[in-house]
Length: 454
Image 1 (tube, rainbow, N blue to C red):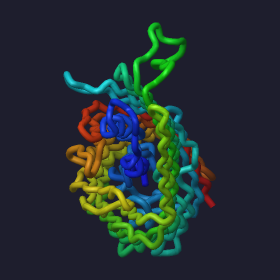
Image 2: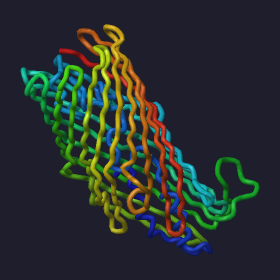
Image 3: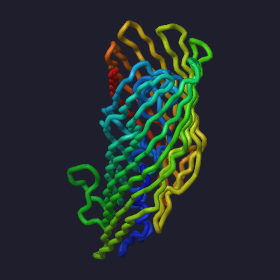
Image 4: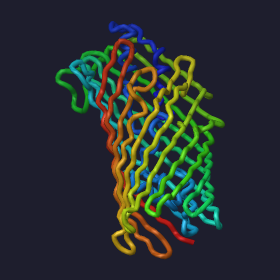
């Protein structure tokens, strides 16, 4: 799932009969139209962890949270931090992606004239957390949504005598249900564990059209070339739906060697897949020289794998002044290789490498009630190079967040914004056609978080 391009394998067997262009070349054009990656922000299978803002407080400091005390969503970053929860509380936070845009531009002197653009929005709440402390123990229950997207992509190509257009709609979501427990060994040392049931779902529909022949001169009104009598026409539709359930656990430690310094470490295990449901339906219709050919493929129970990588992080919380908290997190995720999806005609592979990331955050309490928060994030791609066999996109990401919090005796309310920028490249290849593309992604998010102290 997650942009596994399921329509490509089934189309490879389509036939274009009766055309002077030849079946291989015509099939190549249609394959190329479908091989260009679209929604590259949601890279396949969460290849890059902690890209998007998540957490009661961490979202406003660019996800720096391993060395933080007392966050309701510490179960995700470092469960040992729960020990320092001051009040029993209920918190909810969410993000609305007001604008998400991905654009791909052909690269090089022999660049293919193909354009692709994706836009989307997400409005689902991202966290709900309940936490409470009992003596030397603290507990929390969490409903987390680290990722949720609805993306719409349009990609077109115009080679003069060949024109293709593909429209894709995609929905992806991760839902984490679970909680954490923390124990205070001493006032300056705590440990914690967490456990989650994870539901990962993906849905995708795609429609593609390819026209071959000489366009009208002058062209008819409207975007794209027009063909009064095209030599051949190809149409393809695809439906893909998947749901995977898995388990993951975590552990953490928080040590305060000095009053002004907290050192935290947390790790989240690889997800252990429990069950999956996935189906794929594709149909392709081609017409050339009075001959109509169709190809339909249905896979009602695909062999499906969805694995979150092992994720570890170390964080530092530094207080140079009573009103100022500085946060530094360094994260690492494990690389691995495995087959994501298999059909009778093709296998989609994932291959990633060990990847490091860095998050910087700060909190400044400039008055009795108000605190200013901000942060920076750098998250390089877990994919070092693009290839048609494993990944056809890669991006390095940079993010920034800014927010303000109001706190009184009964509740806390925070507002903020988050910006994510990605830069990288993409590869499209079909038969004897190939091309590289520069990829740029921008996402703007409005964030809100509230906590009620019981």
